[in-house]
Length: 423
Image 1 (cartoon, rainbow, N blue to C red):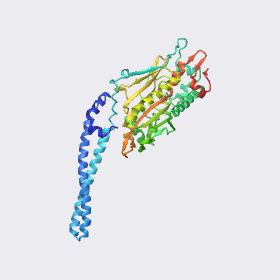
Image 2: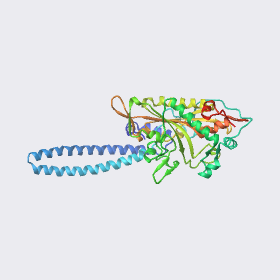
Image 3: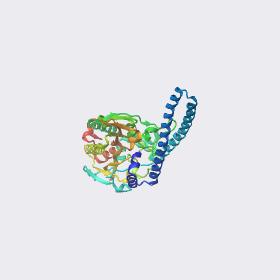
Image 4: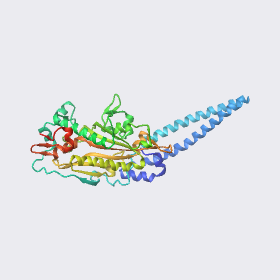
């Protein structure tokens, strides 16, 4: 959520940022500013009344001590009237604050200056690429055929148990899934990320804090009786571990990693792009999250990008890194880098990670602050990234490393998988 201070200081910056994000209701900015001016004016009145009541209350005691009972009683009546006036003003202030908050939460985060203009994924910028594209001319089976051939995943069984988009991993497929999770977590903790294992359901306050509510309620599974939401990503519970907290400045950055299953309704998804592991309603992901000093968050973002890039290099996959344009960014992000890996069998790029800096957008909603050396309490910056999402990584590993005698396992995974081949 944007801070009110920004509205007071730089309205044009907000409007320019909203335009880059293709936000369709810029008039909300003027409405927020108008309410803020009205609220501050009424607050001044409230402060004057409070001061008058305080002063009169002291005078009442003095008058009573001097035996001036009638004057004291008259002043008491005046104080009672002012208190009633203060109650009415407080109710008006509460209504204005609620109205202002309802408008504030409709505004997305502002994009960083480096975010390119654009409305569609085709307008994203390629930052760099790496890896070698395999030659599958002799054998080019997509992963849904490979998983059936080697009995790694049963999509039909998952469809019977739950529905489409809920696969059952079997045998060596389940082992490869477990190997990837363990390797990703070990890789992250070796880089200084503290491992946590959070709940897979969150309450409304947690979903609001990270910006899933009210922006993405239609994409989350909702347990209505308890009003809990199944998490779309570990970012939600992990970020909320520090909700309503003040972090000592010397403890920054806070770096955490977590494995969780993720649940997404993906309403409206259809066609060849969702076949097999390309898009699921339940999938596994390992996440990294940081809270940083505001002056160091973009340095942390670059560090996280390099961290994920090295992970893909270790797996031996061809990849590219994209800087998302304004129209393709998430509601909460100030700057996002997407990682895509190339599926040689499908002959297309598949997204496997997003690494984002949210600046103070989430921490303002969650009230995640730090106390500097002068004792002042300020908003921290939050960042997160996939390290990595498993389904499309597994799809590309199976497709890109297939051979006539089986599927090769990348060297870094062999100690976790227990073999160098699936056959």
